[in-house]
Image 1: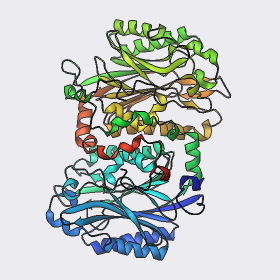
Image 2 (image 1 turned 180 degrees about the horizontal axis):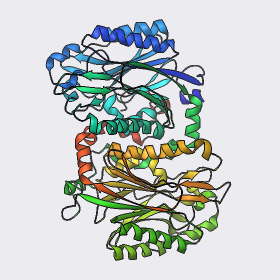
Image 3 (image 1 turned 120 degrees about the horizontal axis):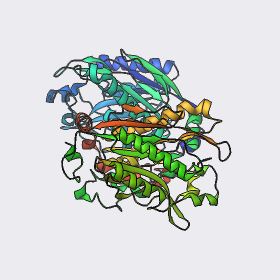
Image 4 (image 1 turned 45 degrees about the vertical axis):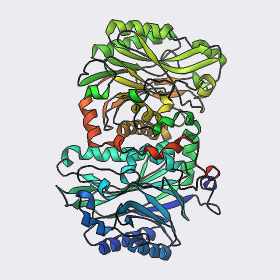
Length: 315
Length: 315
């Protein structure tokens, strides 16, 4: 059944594949952040991981806490220092790597991007963050042009994977359009945290919503989901951010099978079973019953009266 | 802000509205089921509910456990016995009622439908279940033609409500298309239960997935969600079904604000706050950042290779 789930891969797929998540603190020095990330990948591979995902913008602090054009100096080309080091390590260890980088595409044109590198070291392609937030201390619309590569899957040696980035996680459309391409797992490299002033009152609720909505993508689509989140306090801007970590992997039933503590850098490894995926989709065959004849208005901003809300035939 | 959320209603909306959920056992006699449902509505109204939702197919046992053409005798026209009794009670109590009925539309043409009746007794309209399951002991495709009224909202006196039915709950598209019409709350009348043989091994997991995916609709769309589920064992078919009850209301942050025990008939009442809804959407403005230019392929069954999966431009 693995072959059916991933028709484009050559040869039969094994029943299981293993994924690694590297959750880490970041400092100001990109080279030290890269070294820490490579250490994490090495640790994950040592525990059997075949695909390892780093956190969003792993080579730098989360610089979007303020709008400052000098921060564009942190961006890099692809290929560039981060992806070249990851490609070399991928080849050495025989693991695929999802490397989220601040991509410089041209002067004045930057993206929040994930490079997907196969276990051979080959760059399989890029995903550029499609849903870009702009909130106090998350001024991403200043730094990142919206992605223009659409939703993607990548046939790594171990599994067909999808990648979405942070704010994308709140959009069921993004998970759906990735899953419909046959993704077996969707990775969400993230940098989400609390405003310190809100942490005591809103913290548990915000974390729970984040975890719940991503688990629901696994359930609704019958895929594995892996969220990889930054950890630690970074003070840069009004009050800094407390990144909450708590990276996790959940199965296609929404059950969390591995979860990090929130407090510090950690490497998670989890096994994913194609039997679980197949059985879940046989038991609850949601893809069979989609009413694709009714979904077109999802492409509208809002279905208000001026746009024809009262028309019962719009669906 | 209530007025902004519900532009079609006349006059300012109050800060809060209150909803009631009637979770009940059903027997073979439709008149007794109707009487029990009316008692539940009365109890909810007595506790302040302004919109009361009954469970899916509330006037009968869950007859879809086997395919038997004699069960079409259970269907009724709209208006018909169930909606007429509900309309009279709505008018008497001044509450809106969501009445899910087995609708006979023509000879050989039946739907799984919810009638929405305003507090005046007026029939505001129908929602006909769009996603129709077919699984062992849930043979709904035999009984129900797929809905043809699209996704709807209804301006009751107390709130703008959306209604979806049971299997619809697994489809983020359905929640989105209802929320985009300005729904403040989405009701999910349901009849979901365990196969007794699976209950001990799969029961908690299935219930958790059901609760999680509906909470996620609240989070992703910034709306209240109310699930109203049948309760009790009904033996009709291979092994019967244990309906798990556990009706609940959650707020736009996904927090459960009221929840029934699973064991017996129960009336739930919960208050919904337009301030909570407004504040949540201001804090996490997901609707602002939807990439409506990328969603069109949601209207495809699957994005496999034969259909152009490898085309990076499809999104």
